[in-house]
Image (cartoon, rainbow, N blue to C red):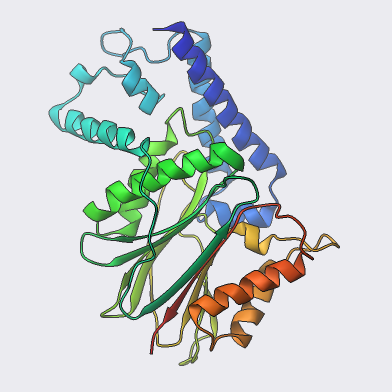
Length: 343
């Protein structure tokens, strides 16, 4: 196998390992709980162990060697999955079909997409704003249609900043645009996305992602959250519920752990309810005293301004961020999406 290709794999796997180890050491426990969903730190350690095993195989010159014929698997296969250890011609017919599908998706993921557009969703008033801390950023929001006609809402955040984070998020966007029109379940989409990226040598960090499917006829939102900051659901009329619901993670971030599990949850939305999606650059914005803006200030503003339109709510949130940070430059990308149930 080409030595330059192996050196490239070694460099990217080393970078990915360092990213995960640094995240484990330096991330506050409270933030780890959000990013990991129902998983724990041992799941990340298991992912690091897989990386260590691959790096050991590189040192022993056995990475990518087929366990059946002992020849090297193709570079295209190894590039998509650095744990690959069986040549394509030794796989069963169903395994080959699945692999061909994933290879095709992997190629689609690398291509750029057309700019997103704000859709018209029946019964839902939408507004959004995204600002990068650098020239380009790693935050992302988008809208889709699932195979069953449900309207998809997504917001994501790459761990990291700048051009590399932006390129990774563009790849994530490509994957979602490819998969969602063929699926009905947000959880199935995120499982497939994780499979595509978990062992991909170009994917050196992790991504948090919230994905929901909204049905206007029933006003239900089926959602899953891969380690993303909990969206705020404000109920204009309590109807026996708490006025605020946090849509907490239902699984770990994409690419963060080795054994990935994702579940879905369902909430019913009522006229006047407000769903606020955001990235951690919003809640972690700092004032001059080094204090974070936090979640409770978001709740306070939404309570006070709940009668405003979605667009005016976004403006009010932006003003709050600006005033809180005393017009200081952004430290992180900040993205806000407001969804307000009409009626």
